[in-house]
Length: 231
Image: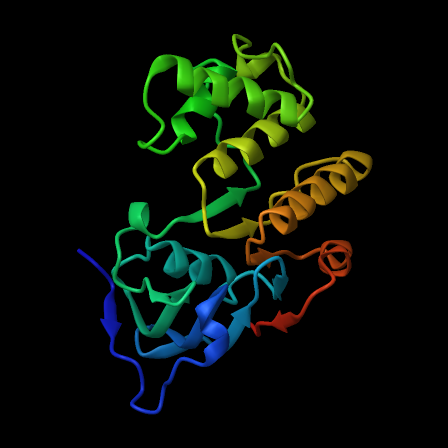
């Protein structure tokens, strides 16, 4: 069962800036008739929009709406436009929106190489071609020779790098960050945060960051939206 998705307001129009980046046009999320999130925003390629707010303000629900995994109890109106295409009604696997969570979400029963290969798009065919992509990806994050390693043997920082690269190998057109740095210690947090931000900028990905941390928001160096708690 899918969430109720109402058509946009008649006055909603896509601006010329919607041709590139991620646009949330009059996006309104309701639960039992009560407005949880109501915003209109555009994130240009390579830019980061930070969403802040207390627990229960709808931050994670907003991310679920964008990736297409909203619970059926919610009613959603407005449009989600990615690089000029309305993706509001597409299934998650066709939206090409990547997401990183606080948990690295690596598969414990797969090797590091197999975890990365899982992210490769179907267009990359053949064992040799897929292995070459995996080897290059590991070299890109300073983990050469880690193909056969068990995820349990990696440090927190190494696991975070693998999770980032697996997501990037899927060739997303936008990136969502659901407090992916909050489980790391202070020194490692700064390093991984800069790695994620720099790779997103290199690929000109629009990024939506959800965080409680002021340091994350400052490092993002972009616009900020504060969501209020709804009783």
